Image (cartoon, rainbow, N blue to C red; front, side):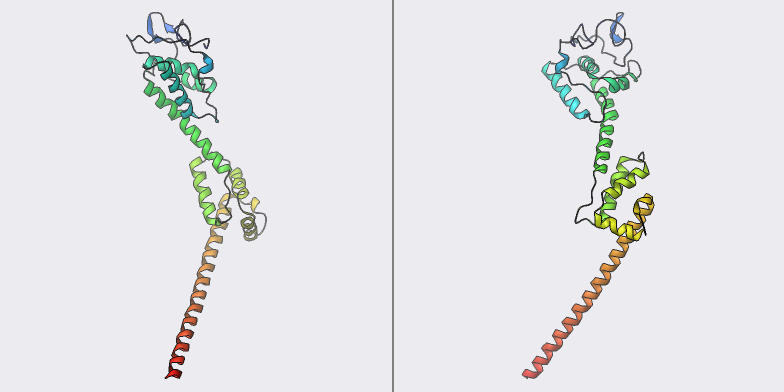
Amino acid sequence: MLGGIGSTGATSGTGRGGENPQNPNKTFSYPILLTLGIDSPMKNISPLVLPNYRGLPNEDPNQFLFELKIICKIYDYELNNQNLKLFFSTLKDNARRWFMGFALDSINTWAKMEREFLKKYQEYCRVKDRKDKLFRIKQDDIEILEDYLDQFLFMQKRVGTNLDLDFVNIIFLRGLLESSLDVLNLMGRGNIFTLDLDEIIELCRNYSRKRTLNQKIKFHTEAGAVSELIEELANFKTNILVELN
């Protein structure tokens, strides 16, 4: 298959991925339907210069398509037939099995192939990236507990609901500052790691409400002290003016 991608390579002969001798534009058993009546010769391209895509979590589908388009431009591949033939040759393992799952002759343009490919693997890549970010989340030194909680829940929602909840608990607690962990342990009256996520969230919310209440009390206390000081200064000024008169 990869002994050189040319007129005698990926698209010649019969069998899987081969041309139908009764109609050279119609393939036997893979989803590509070539455009009738268009001469689309393939060049002998070394497999060493072709990008490959296997459908693995660490692969970037956008980067793969970018590299493939560069190859197409270098070899003057501008037709659907040429691009589709070359694309099939670059798929390996899981990606090729996914491709072969399409209905026979269901892909007839490069635009459709690119759209289907990105629909399958772009979101897959994004979800992996979101999971990686969730696994690495940490509470900043100046970040309050409630902000960290909101950020964590937002990222968890973007990842989806297919994560084990016990594992989610560990990720959340692992990212906490030691001071925040001590507070939650104190409020939970024991080991916070034994609680489920809903209970931990409730503790975080309670702590935030208590913290807000304390701040309000402190503000009003300080505001009252300032008012008293202003009143004392006003009285002092009045007394000075009386003495001067």
